[in-house]
Image (cartoon, rainbow, N blue to C red; front, side, top):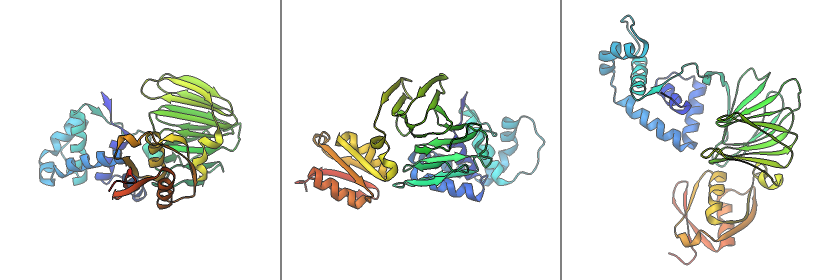
Length: 320
C-alpha cells in the first residue's frame, strides 16, 4: 500500500479547512511557486466539487464505516463529509493516510519566493540562506537535536555546539553537523551536499550508507540510480548564488537554462535547437530579470521575447 505524500495531505487539509490561518497563508504561497503542488491541488479541488453537500450527507455513514470501521450514526459537519469522501477515494485507490505524520510539528516555515534569496537566523543564531523556490521547516522547540527539513536549496552557517548536533533532513538524505558551513541542493535528480568548512556526516536514507565530507568536498547523489560520487569543488563558485550572483561558467545555453530558471523563478526556453550549444559565461550580481535579459542578449547576440507571464523564448537575433 502506497502512502499519501505530504503535498497531497496538504491539499486535503486546505480544502477541508483543517489548516490554521497561518498554515493556509503558507500553503497559498507554496501554490504560487510549486507547479507540482498546484496540479495536485486542482485535482483535489475537482474531487471536492464533485461531492455536493446533499450527496455527502446521503452517504456519510457508509463513507465513515469504510474509513473508521463501524461507528454510531451521528450528525457530522459538512467539511468532515467532504474529508471522508476524499479519504475514501484515496483508500479505494490504494493509498493510506497517517494523520500523525509530524506535519503539525513544523510550526516555523520559511519560504523563498520565486527569484528571491531569503536570509534569516535560526533560534540558535545559525545563519541560513534559501534559494529561489526553496522551503525550510523546523519545530518550535528547536533545541536538542537542532533539526530542520529542507526542500530545494539552502546554505547553512551553523553555530558550533557539541552538546546539540545540527541535523538537516531532505527527502533522501540526513546531514549531521556540529559547527560548519555547507550547502545542500535537492532541486534536481542529482542532489548535492557541498562542504565549505568543518565536517559533516551524510546518511543516505534509502540504504543508510554514511559518507563523511571534509572542506571543499562535494557529494552528489542520484535519486534514480542511487549512485554516490564525491569530488573536490570550488565553494566560491558553487555557492555564489547565496551572494545573489548567478554564475554561468562557460556553459551551453541548454545546460545554463535550468540554473537561470531556478535563479529567477521563471521559464526560459529555446526556439531553435541549433542555438542550444551556444556558450555563455558571466557573473551576474544583483541583477533583476530585465537587467539579466539585456546582459544575456548582449553576450550571446540572441534575442529574448516574452511569450506570457514568467515565460520567455530565446530566438536568433535576426529572427522576426
